[in-house]
Image 1 (tube, rainbow, N blue to C red):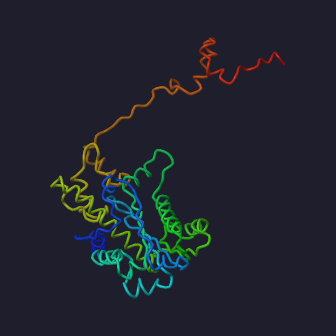
Image 2: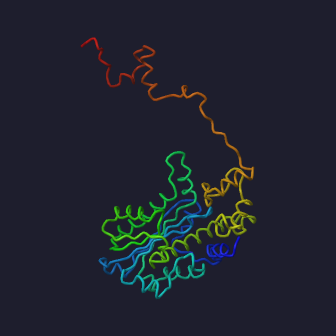
Image 3: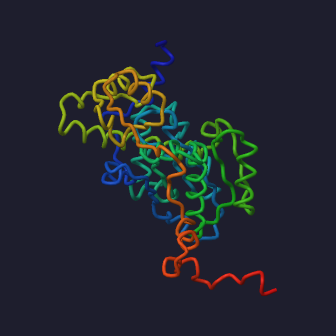
Length: 333
């Protein structure tokens, strides 16, 4: 692992004393459920709901094999956009801020009587590893990660509009092609100026702040999952690092804590190649053979119930076949 990669993993690894934001719903996380958290609409907006606002959206945890992917959203009065977020509080892309700085910014955002709390509303959508995998492993009609992410983004924005917030500008870090994504959002929110761009989290302060909300929430969610393991297993108490496949701590934890039947818990994305490869390579995973019909012709069909009477020639057996009346013989014509 080169020095740059080591630095990236260090920045992605949760702080030891990560701030536990109100967006952490412990019961939902431990049960592997996805959920949404919305902060109250801030006083700077509720005092005059006609105030024009700017809104940013970003995610954290798209690539890890462990833990949820979290979408963060933040909105505030347009007039305060850059002065409050950039000049006063120095928000930046969460991936270039240290874990301690991210945690401090989030704590300020959640503390009453601060200027961030007074001016900013925020929300998160925690997409559990279990639900991500369930969508991606569907036997038919796969619900891929891009589609899941896009739906989470749209739902978060709709909830802000439903509160009556006058959102005039929206900035989003892209999923796939910026132009295609932007056109889709413009059809859904036609009265709002929308900008979808690569590296939006380093270009637009509201997206930077949204990325901090997402990242701190993901870090704390990982900590909740890890503490649950540590409470009943000494071996599992060893840290799993950032949760990324490139992190040796993560892959070591996966190898050392794999159950032969269940694999891992709801914190693991079973649709990731890392998990699939480990289950196959270790050779201890329980094999399951699902029964399949030997002959498709022997399978029962719904129409078989309607055909029975004609084949048997009996009046009583054909109750369903004559439910809507008997066919008129052609001879009558």
